[in-house]
Image (cartoon, rainbow, N blue to C red; front, side, top):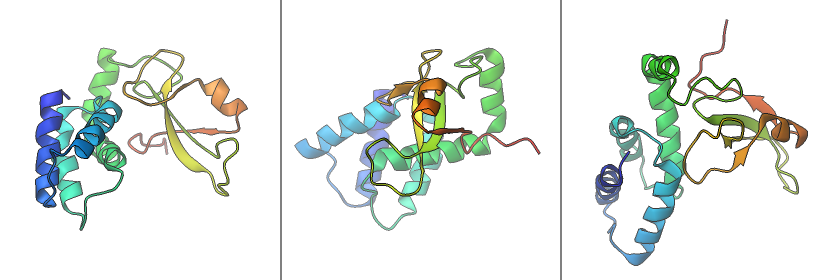
Length: 157
């Protein structure tokens, strides 16, 4: 998505919840959030906005809510995903999905008891965008993570 797409989305979301989106604090949050989600296609924003507006309050972690909406959008649009993979757009790497590696685990030094899902930019093909950490499958497995599939990829029966 472009900065203009995100700016329109940001303003609409904040006005839905009666929040001024133009304060200095909100501008810093805008920039951080955009860095994390700029790889999300603009065509997914309508569904994402609808899901967020269905909530009672604005999510504290808006980038996470946007990414969750994007995963839902991708699960509802498998033909779009398939077309991207066939055209070679961020596809072809056997180590990732769309330039990202999904894994479940407990970060070193964490006090977590159960493994949580994480997403990393692919360190093999250099795919992925935004302010997401880069990693390789081997590095994640060596650190104790279990490589998983993203929610939008249907498991083979």
